[in-house]
Structure formats: structure tokens, C-alpha cells
Length: 184
Picture (cartoon, rainbow, N blue to C red):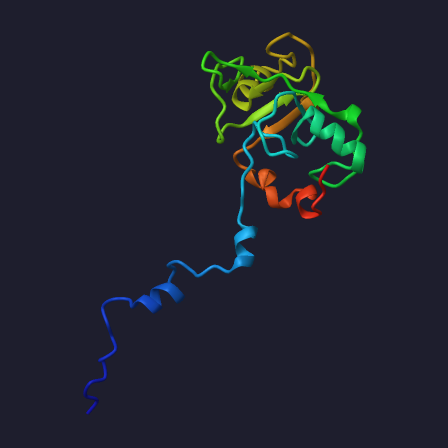
């Protein structure tokens, strides 16, 4: 009459069930290790992967060290991130501001930049601000003047350096010069 029909109905998950079916740590192969997402900090050059000293950026907001981008464009004549042709004259010199502790910060709100800050630059002047400052003091008030030196600009002159909602921009494995293994 159906004796012992519930012998395998356990009130717990076995190691095999947990690891294979319901989550748990999966065994990773060597192929998947290099595919993992690696984020580049906002204050690092996209070519050399080290902190910049003389920062320049393209219209997409990719930040480069001056000497590194000049050497790369001279050799390959393409943008190291997108792989599209680039002209050195279109690059914008950035002016980051530091606080008393040596950290980069917004010159309008004096908030230090972190990996979760939304950072924008004004292409006309190269000054770097937090998006919060530009939104409150420029966009909402329709005051299209730079917050540091009152140089007029347009909305299309805003370059997004870092957007915490779009972290794929800083995915090192997607950079053209990494995928094609281009070195200077």
C-alpha cells in the first residue's frame, strides 16, 4: 500500500543540489576568468591604466594621459577605446580640482569624487564638475555658463566622464586596444 514512498523527501538541500541547481559557487574555467568585469577608476588613463597627470578626454568621455594618447594616435590613428578614427584636435584638456587632502572634488559643491559619482566636464573650458552641480546650477536654472569662469556653453558641450548608471563604459575588456592587443 505505498510504504516508504517519501524516503527521499529531505527537509534540506544536499551539497550537490545547492551547487548545481540552486545557486552556490560554480567551478570556473580559465576562460571565464579573463571575461570577468574589471572596472577602470575615473582618474586613470584608459590606455596606460595608471593615474593620469595631464588628463585629456574625447567626446565620449574616455580619459587619457596626454603623452599616451599622442603616441597611440601617432602609431595607430584610431581611438584606443572605440577603434574609430580620431583627430588629436578634438581632444579636450580636463581641469580637475583637488581639495585640501589631495582628492579630486567638484569645485562648485566641494563634494569629493568617488567611484559612484556622476562626473561631467564642460567641453568649452575643460572644467570637471559633479553632475548634481551642473543639474542644479545650470540645467534647471537654464544658466548656460561655466560654474568656475562664466564661459558660455551649450548642453551638447557636456561630456560624461563617469556615470554610475552606465558602468559598462569602464569595462576594460571592451576596450579596442585590449581586444586587438595594440601596444605603443
